[in-house]
Image (cartoon, rainbow, N blue to C red; front, side, top):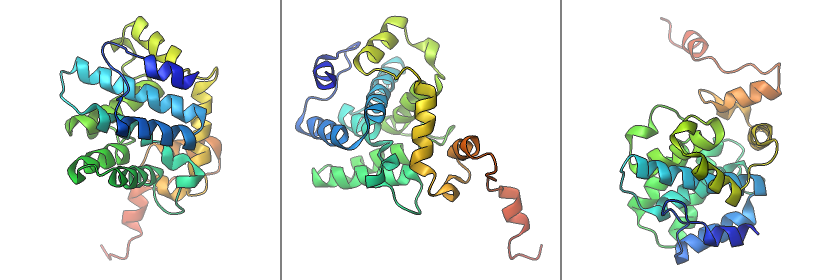
Length: 219
């Protein structure tokens, strides 16, 4: 059902790239991620691409699709390291995948950066459209920050094609936690520290000021 919906989904002229690379990305993520993350990532692509339309930005749909679809793959055990932020794990996975498909290194770097920064608010919006729109899509689907900027018909069409679970808000928080719980220190200075704190009441976030005060410097 998902693949049937995917192939026919055209929302305001936005479609999943029907190219060899686009199809390869779909197949790889479909085979690797949970349904929850696959549908979420698909919605991120559509919301991000539509934000690009609204902002009159020029971007390569294949690159945005790659960034959107790979942005959470670092939450999956098969692509999760022991010491790197999950965003970097995802960015590295995308880089390796795109290299294997002979994508231009400068384009790969855009995708890598878009994934690595997608949980860093206030910065991506000033960068290349692929980077900015990856975060825009994430912020819409997870946080609803630009909810009112999309007509009801558009939101409903995207969710019909790539459904949110009945308890998506809690499900996505749990998915974040499951993907990073084994390396809480990697969330320092990042919004994902809130996820650990939400699930583990006794968790103490790293404190930037404490690190300064306890450094080896004498003053």
